[in-house]
Amino acid sequence: MRKKASSKGARTKQKRLSPDDRRKEFVAKATEFFSEEGFGGGTRDLARRLGVTQPLLYRYFPSKDDLIKEVYRTVYLEPFDTGWEKLLTDRSRPIRDRLQEFYKAYTNVIFTRKWLRIYLYSGLKGLDINRWYVGVVRDKILSRIVRECRHEAGLPAQSKPTPSELEVVWVFHSGIFYYGVRKYIYESPVLEEKEQMISDALDVFLAGFERVFGSGAAVGRAPMKAVV
Image 1 (cartoon, rainbow, N blue to C red):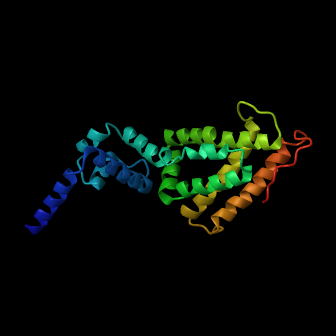
Image 2: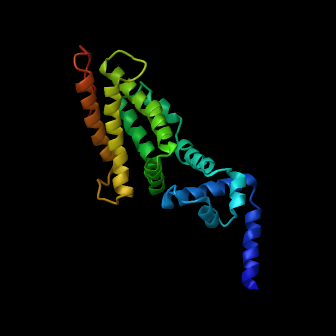
Image 3: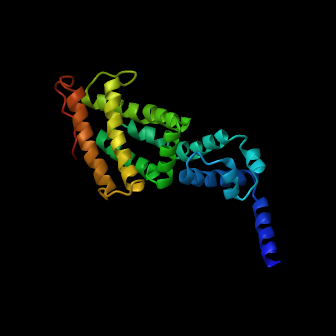
């Protein structure tokens, strides 16, 4: 009898959640579920994990795709600080300082086992999450970095990066991303001083960008400072 009363009390407590709070709870637990099981896990198993019926879950999310999109929004888009765009384009500060600060903040967001596992699972599953996020990174981060590097190198302004410029900055950005994969997914030894890793990567990237794309274009202008 005591066990039944306890179970009934748990259900009563769950019912007191507002619809908004219940929805947030579903998304939070779905995020954990997908990070552990991948996106092949069914809504029946997810509902069981949540301790609710499958029809109740569908009342909040009519389809599994709707739930995945909400996980994407809360995990990938909400943490995307709009202040980062302003930071990257603040030409009152040296470009290296801006990039160091940005990648410190950015990696503080993405370097978690849950974030990385969901990202990798969605890529293996061929879901739109990766394509959406890659587009956000390309347009809001990498294109701005190229534009600021061109300005620092004395190159003419252009509406969008060249394919070569974009590829180079992808290689730089991906190297930092893969540091997180090695540490949190593979659990491999890495340089523990994350900020030192970012600093070293920036030195190589900025010097390389100047050498490859700025050669002969910044006559009379001091070269981009790679080390401070």
